[in-house]
Image (cartoon, rainbow, N blue to C red; front, side, top):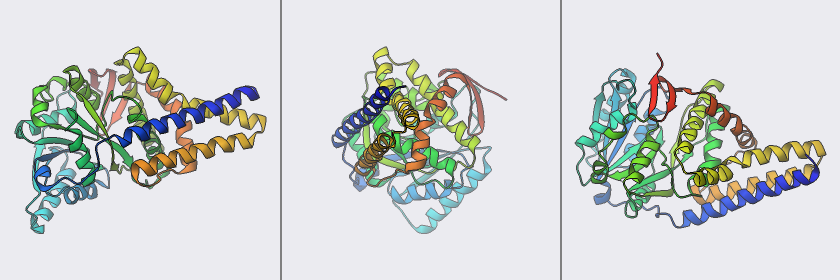
Length: 384
């Protein structure tokens, strides 16, 4: 690579990231407002959470949502072979009863194992939908995710515009370098991924639909054979002419990632799911996603290698400084505070091509307590 090519890579990188930042902020300014819903609105919300034990922060995350979303109805879905999760939800149910709070309602459902070839999360969600009222809002919230009350207001505002409203993930600070790599991957990419194109999928950690609209799709039964629940739900909505509203208000996630193996498995699963998503898109959408979200790590590698070889520290400093300022600008506007850790953020971006390649060639994933061999989104089997 000569000096001209290195300079072109630097200009291309900063130009691409600046364009994405501008589109992100413009889209965010038009998104539903983050306002706290009133008692009548929140009283119609059922917060449905499939729960698995194993993360040390599980109990705190569940408790925080009970407090933040006071007045909603909670439905906790716990596996019958997960005694630790049953103990945790039992303690929280007792604490809620002792508190004397009358606004929040809590239902706990013990769920049998899902049949082989069936998505275990979707299998839990269908009975909860069966018990919901037509005039309720069905809000699916992962068990490691905290939903601020104002962000719930944004989701409800999104349902005034669209069939489904989905949230914007952000990570709270992690305690290990591996957790911080995951944190930086999400915090540096989520807003500029979800808010730069018309929605092609949803954030499966947080999404909401009106119960009557979800039932009109047949509920979750038609998509039980799909491995990626977020892609399956988004596809079901769009195939029937429905629309998706991407909100710009964050939900905060805490996940323990305590080893390099856990980090690699998590990113591998996400990248394999990204490959499954791309398979289902038209060529123009694949091209747009590839340019907007697959080009920048390779450009950054070109800049890094070229400036080191050519001894051009000023150019490298300009690129890294511009990257730092753009990320902080977007994060302050979207999340209300900077989430950027310069060193680990840079490493997180540079290893993205490796994770993408790993997801493309390795078709076996580890997901919580299950190991799956994945051929396609609707063709997978559990490996014993």
